[in-house]
Image (cartoon, rainbow over the protein chains, first blue to last red):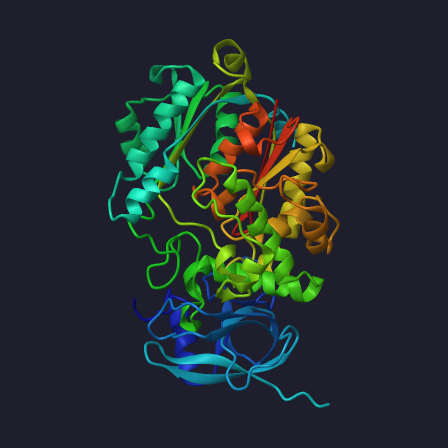
Length: 134
Length: 389
Ligand SMILES: [Zn+2]
């Protein structure tokens, strides 16, 4: 086994730099305003090559979740969760929910971005529940 | 659409061959390496030639599976074709039909071999197979998200949350296919299981249990596909006609799992269903058995809804009450599929479809089986083939 690694293309490196600065940025299209994830040369929506790096507002909604019971990486001993989160900006990202795990259905719960440290990768963006007002 | 329509009944399967899954698996588990991928493919090819009743030199088209190199396989089989290609199981069948229709070849051999078990291929973790082709398989590793099973677990968790389908209902897939495998001499896993056994089995990536995951084993499969005219003149057995094919790929947003999580691949399956059923002039009610690519059990419920075999949101009840085993309303994966027969990446499903249409299913034969619908949706690439007499 080994530790997990990030895929670092030409366009991923600036994103990980922003993550290390605790200010996760994604490319926003200069022509149609869509966000790109994963980072890429062109906008899949309008094919524009033009973009700027925009900080995320830091909020999203859980679309789904899983709990790993089998180990695949040294730096991820089970059990651990992975959540699929749709950011308010549109893209869907995978992450880990830190802090207390909800009971029952996680779909639709609101989360915010926080940052954690991984032995292999360094700073990694994570998610935590936003306290819902009752 | 006009061109695609013309593929109906253009081609027929006249030969099928498989390696000895059971014997080879026993040898691999004992620490041996019986063959490499090319060896398994060659065994299957020889059997397919005999089954078809033709000679090696009758072959003028060659398609090899993704796990073997095209030139080396052609070299080993001694085939210089007028046309050749490399493709997965389902696209190989479609490409063979297209090559035959356009006159590029008339007698096409489709050959696949895989030594994935003895070569210890990994489908998750640091060396995850397929990451060079599907970015989603490796991109989310910084969050520990790896293995194709986890991608389907994520998809099916949401499906259950939105539709009310339950884990126990999903268990119907593993239970039904194990019953089929128990009636199939070529199947690896023949011990019957119950829903209680399924629910008691451990999770791999929750909500998916051990029994939701496919086997990993060695083997080879070959098919001989020819023009339907050639088939009528030369085949030893009754040709199995390809009545329709369909394809629709959901590539948009694939790496961040949009087609899985937002659509459950449904639009791709619906477009593919429209094409294949129109081409064949058939509908779900005409189909006697269904084969579904089942690297994970949850492909089955998603496809049953997507291809119109039950109403949207009703598949949990459909599987549990109407049934997807040989004893139920709609037999699915009659050979045991990837979960219980053999993991030949869709190739064994084509062979099983041909056997059922020929009436060679033995103890698992579907009565009066005229049409078998195969479909797959691997990573959102929806492909369909209808085989019939
Ligand atoms: Zn754009």
